[in-house]
Image 1: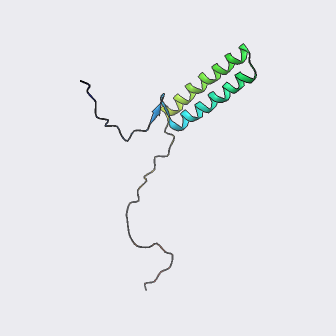
Image 2: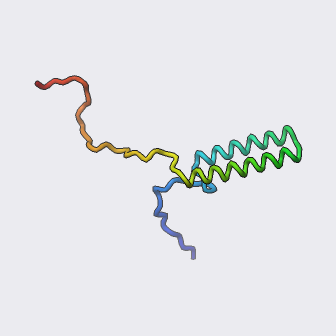
Image 3: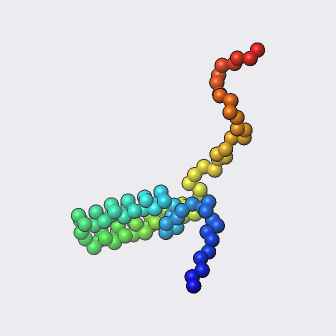
Length: 93
């Protein structure tokens, strides 16, 4: 019988091949562009250069994703919550 673990890290960001979704999409776009270059200008040197560039970009994106946070770590919630309408007019004397 199979045993399933409870997924406790629900707040962690989604990763594909170690990259966040936005960086993974960037990697896939560059791979598609490099495939177009290979198809329309076929040559052994082009294939070698494009593969080295794609591998280099992947390593760069991995280091960027692991080293720094891509989003600002600001507090998303206000200190106080109020139902009063915010206005610039002052009605009380």
